[in-house]
Image (cartoon, rainbow, N blue to C red; front, side, top):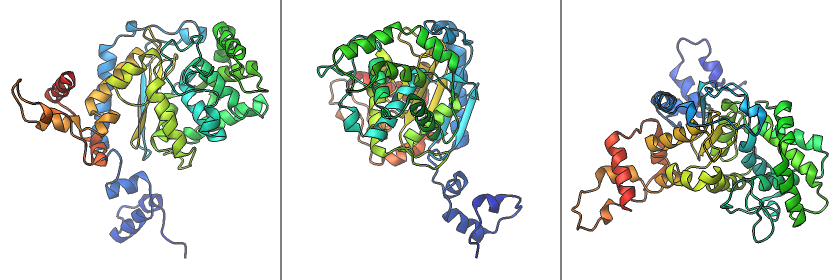
Length: 415
């Protein structure tokens, strides 16, 4: 016969669902509702989680004025954005979705494209081939600096020279038009088959003011950094195109959620890239994703993230969710002032940095025995988490009160 109905067919129009039918259907489905019935959602208390995110969003909007930063003005199209625009989107590995503010408004992806371009290049060629021409280390200098590593290749794929290099490698045998189609198709797959669009005005604005990027390309050419037979000026042009793709906060969060879900899009269910590629991309983001603030972000937030000068930041909680923030005013190193503050408060609120998944600092801080100053404080140090999955599962219901947050900060200071 036809077999069991889908979960949607069971629920649609039904006032009463027979218990046996519901149980059988849930066992054979992997939808959000099926996981909710089974109690296996990555964020089990979704309503509480949404309330907390909304509270954080409003708090940052109220306490961080747009005057604390300034729109990027070296790319004229970016200078024209309303500085009051502010949006947040979250997509979990189960496909649950939350958006606040202007989350469906288009903006150019800019440097947020770099880890995606790197990942797609690694998926195409393999990581070893890519890393013959681009390194893995933080550069320690500005993102557009004239510097190469000891092997005369860019330090990493998150600085301009490194992104131009990965652009030169991506389906290099194809005509430029076909390469661009491959790129936008890859971005769309990461976003759960949501289409992305090319922003011609931003592209022309980028190209007409890109004297330093052209100089960087010639600098790399001088040291034979590009592969043989590569048209390096075409690679620069392709890099500009990759930065001029319009996304929304919703789409960017969906792309981040594919990274969070180990290369499988939570929205489409399609495998977009291999887990090893995702791992390499997240490690790159963790060490190099926030320009000259990368090390500070790793300490204060502790999650893989990438920023762009259009004011967007996306962050990945592996195995849990992707999050995107957009607010155009930037700080002195080129990161969104509201975006950075939201990410910082998010990490503090949920205590979800990568090392918190190994060392449960909250439990150590809440239950450690108080000792005098001259006693050994070994017991106060964070303990390795015995069950990381349970720690992740607390995200929807775990909210540190002010005393707990102060306790964690105190422990960190003593270390």
